[in-house]
Image 1: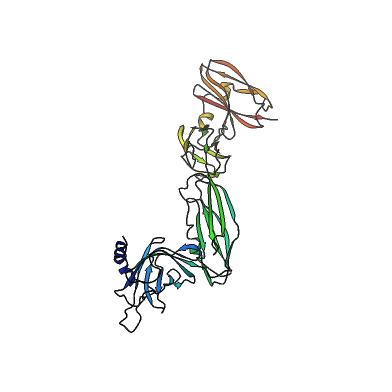
Image 2: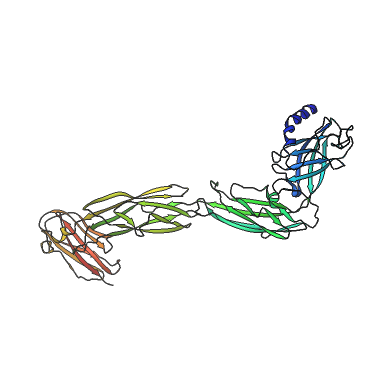
Length: 463
């Protein structure tokens, strides 16, 4: 088995020896000691990074072997070449020589300052031709007074939206103190990386001594599952056990769409200005509720002749457990019925309905048909008494023939207030009592339609 490993090392490492960027082997010889490095850590217990180099030196300081990291955290190997006795100079190790180690950090383009300890896991602990040894290497920070502190050890993001326009960002400061010229923050925090919820960024990646580094944490990330999150950043302080721990918490909430009324009714609206008191536009209100614990984000599209009051198609975001009222205006341009799916509402709701369609209906009328009607107010004998009134009034009218009839009251905004008559009436005199005690004071429009003819009258309620 050992010979197989040595043969494998021989195949993999020949190319690596010549690709060393910093340490150079004095001379490759026929004498070699195969070395498998099972683990290589630098100060603070972090692994060497891609293209870092471990060099092995004999007691005379001759570089006689190099291992290059080509996969972070994986095993790597090297051949430690021996000296040729017949020559006048040293090419490498002699039998019984101890190993000495130096490490080149490719990212920072410098040698590491750590003191290295070799643990021999298998095989001889001194150089020996045709031997095979398995080792682990750990760099120890030589500064006993090195310390690190975090500005805040805990942060709770609270409830965040599943879909957000701007992610929530929080920052804290790490302070470094000690005799080193600088500290490789990339090494210190490299094991934290990203999680499903939190993205951690460091600035700067290398911190001068007695200065600070900012940790920026963003929450949430895209496609985050919806449940509470906790994460701890364990930051080694250069000693064996003590660590500074930064705890992060958060919860992703749900938005829920509730539409109490999925149909808006606008009544009759004149298509041009008129003297009959018929409004030229009508308003109604779309009510959108959010029954969830995260902000409801909605985008709505609307079709002519309906429009939003602000002229935009976007509906504002709705906080949790709150209601948003959206004024909708009906402004027709032709005489006909308008029954349409006027509003399409798309949201980030996580419970049905995710999206919905609001039905709108109204009728465009020609105002001239009121003033030019063969049935004038005198023909209907359309009267009410008293007018103005504060609680109730009696409406009287006469029909020349039996016909389907309607008597409706509208507000000045065009909204139907009450329908007093809707059905077939016989020819002759009719009286209807209208109780308006529950209405606010103001001007209303009384509209009588019978036999295809229309009459209208203004009425004033006083309090």
